Every structure is written in structure tokens, then in C-alpha cells.
Length: 275
Length: 268
Image (cartoon, rainbow over all chains, first blue to last red; front, top):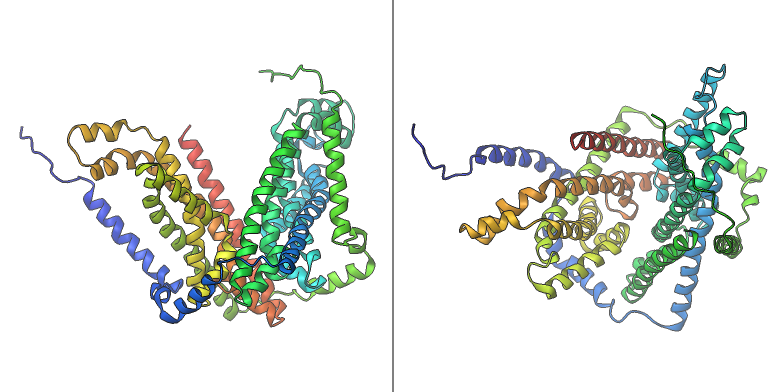
């Protein structure tokens, strides 16, 4: 038997084929995305961007502008808080409706099985629409109904996060110990009582902590939603950007990063307090 | 089998929790007052009628073949933006992960970590608005914006998985005489590759979602179509775009759930 030393990686041909395939897929993608790196080094673009970036330093810290930023920051926090409050109003009933651990039709042969299933299906599809459409799209639409300002942002948060919270609430309720609730339902209590005495004590902390986490996310989201005119820091940033005022943009960016950190910290504290 | 029953007594009255909840409730009320937003006003007959009228204008959606063709192009563009951005970001992050994991000394580690944190703290939409200034309107700006943000996220994640990977295989190669690069490529990379791939796929999923909306600041994809149609008050077309967005998001969700289940199944 002859032993030969393999001097090359035996996987080379396969890797080569893979590379060819990748290029075959990549090329049309580059076309579709109109990928033109030379735009980055186009002297005109560099001029515009350079002028803009130079203004970033120093950040604008005039008192009048800072008071504007402060107002927008408070508005952002208020939007997030009000949005989450309304989201809970949407999410709690939906979550209770779709949660299987509170399903009466599931525990035995009843006549309204079909009816209950179809209600659940409807609720689930409704939730999917609420959370499947991104919050900024909701904001863009609602701005057309309620005008520019915070109300559209609050409602957009309420709608999207309502759908998300409902889904997670029902998942939390199903993942914990469901025996107490089942026992209550089997012995004839209604769903609300079974929820309050059978499920809530075990899962209250997790429900609260997830809600606070979502609040933190909604602070971030409410900043972004300002770009379509839904109030808060984002709207201010959008205005400054359109006027190519770099100093203002950098101030707002710094405040935004600080606000996200602050929201992180607040949510940590609240979660600890509720533990 | 009988499931174990929790025999601990229920938690008693908790003053701290109650106080926290009270404060939170107060702050929530304060928020509504500050925004001068009365939830009751949202459900007046007038508001509901306005709302119904507004929604009514979105039906029926425009399903003509021409427009669906445009939507299809928009979807493809959205997918292309997100895939390219994720691919470029993953490549950059692979390079960035070496200093992030501390292989070039603590100074380089601190610096690259700061860069990563900065890149990922600025939201994609803000990057997109900046990139539109830098390279003009269009999908290229969106690709760049997603690339920047994703590089921040993946650079850190890649660096951390590199840090946590055992160094024995690459050490063995080094001791038997291979160079630094070869020992990395054959000793370390194969071990972390599956994790890097799953991180990248996860980010791709997020980026598809982001790419649908980056267009609001002019960065291409479905979002730009929606913004355009709504500006022209063409609600029928806009509603088709929204439906396409919803379907795309739901589809991506389904695929990723399925993949995750397969992966979990494979891992036992």
C-alpha cells in the first residue's frame, strides 16, 4: 500500500465551487442594491459630508437650544411611558384570551370548542397585524390622522408593543406552573379568577419585568419615530439634519445615547425593586 | 408522571413592590398629562369616524399586475440591502473581532470595543439619514447604514465568542510548527464558525425588518415606496406596500422559527 502525503487541503474543490456559487448570487444582489462604493469617494459627496461633520464639533450648547432638547427628552420619556401604558391595555385582554392555560374548551368535551378556537384564531391574527407592521409605519400612518406630534408616536408604540406584549404575556402564562389555574378551572371557577389566583402569583414578576424591558425598548423606538414627525428627540434631530446643522445633531446624538443608557439603568432599578 | 407541585407558601404583602407600583402609576399619569393626551378623547364618536374614514381609503389595495411587479422589485431590493449589509458587516466584524478579543493588546481592545459600542448605539435610521447625506438617496445608503450598525453588533459578539473559545487546538498547531494565521484558520475558526454563522443569520433577520423601513429617510427598499405613495396620497398603493411588508416580516419570522427548531433538534 502506498502512502502519499496530501499537501493540499482536501476540501479545496468544494470551497472553490462554493465561492463560485456565492459570486453567482452576490452579483445580482449588488445590482439590486445599486452598490457603488465610488459614491463614497465622490469629491462632491465628501464635500457635503465633510462640511456637515466638521460642524459636529463643538456640539451646540446654547441655552435656548438645550432647553429645546430637554423638552424633547422629557417628551420622549413621556411618549414611551404613555405608549407602554396603552399597550398594556391592549395586551392584557388579548393575552388572557389566547393563553391556552386559561382555556376552558381545552379541558374537556364542550359544545363551544369551535367557537372558542375561532375567537382565539381571530385574536392571534389581530395581534400578528399589530406587531407585524413596524412601529414607524404605524407612526407614519397615524401622523396623517392626528397630525404631527407626540400623539401619533404614543399610539404607534401602543399598537405595536400591545401586539408584542400580548404574545409574550400569553407565552409567560403558559410556560409557568399551570396546575393551580387548571385546578381552579376544573373546580368551576371562571377564567378571570383562575388567572388572578392560579397564574398571577407565580408569574407576576416575570410579566412586570418583561413590561419594563419593553418600556426600555420603546424609549429607543420613540426616538426613531420622530423621523416621521411623531414628536420627541427624533423629530428635533430630523429637523436639524434637514438644515444640515451639525452642531445641533451632535448634541442630540449625545443626549440620545445618554437617554438610552439612563433608560437601561432605570429599567434595571425597577426590575430589582419588583423582584 | 406527576409534575412537581410548588409547595412554598404564597408571597405575603410587599410594601416595596406596592410603593414602586404606585410611583410608576403616578409617573404614567404624569406622562399623559404632560402630553395633554386624554385616552378618552381617542374613543369619541368623532375620532372613531375619522379613523374609520382614514382606514377606508386604504381599501381595496392596488393589486394590478404592474404594481405587484414593482412591489416584487421592492421586496428583492429590501432583501438585497439586508443580505449585503449583513455579509459585509460579518466580514468586517471577523477582522474587528481579533482586536476586540484582546489579541493585539489592551489598548487595541479598548479602542475597538469603544468603536463597536458607538456603532451599535446609534440607531440604524439615524445612520441611514447620515448616509443619505454622504452618498445620496437610494439603496446604497441603506446598505451602508445597516452595515455600520451591524458591524458594531457583530464585532462585539464575534469578539466575545473568540474570547470564550478554548485555545488548545490553535496552540497545538502552533507548537507543531504552523504559523499564526494558519493556526487561527485551522485551529480556532472551525470551532467558532457555527456560532458566528448563527449570529450573522440572526442579525440578517433583524436587518430584513430594518431594511423595510429605512426607506423612510430615502434609503431604498419597500419603505421608500411606502413613503412615496403616502406622500402622493395614493392610499390604495400604500396599503399594498404595507401588506407586502407584513407578509415579508411574517415570512421571515416563520423561516427563522423553523430553522431555530431544526437547529435545536440537531443539538438534541
